[in-house]
Length: 133
Image (tube, rainbow, N blue to C red; front, side, top):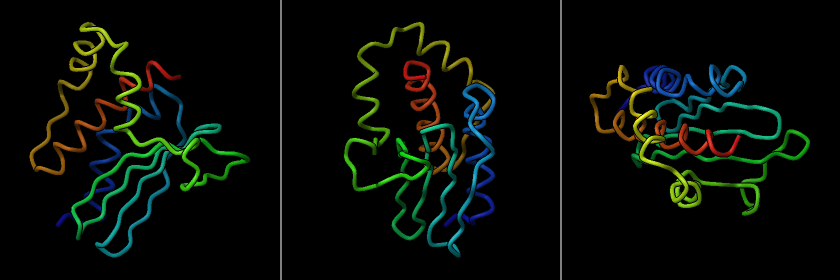
């Protein structure tokens, strides 16, 4: 199990590009006593939630298109899971896109299984956002 403090720190390290490159605001964080952690990045009409359920070992990245600053998880048209976004964007990516993205993350290392999943998600999200925004 990972502590909330460690999860939030690792998330901010792996996903720092959201602020630096894409102009998202400083993230808001949720730590539910080692059960659930969430780091949310917001920008205009988009929220990116990077969450982890510790007991279930479930990691997820979800994008929410917001209306008046409010997101509706149950609205299938405004809720996009990273896996669905990958299916949409990956077919238009080139080998050069992947190479540049890998170069961007060269200095970012992951040691645990969860960190490796988080780093993979960060790489995927950055590729998708470069073609979305």
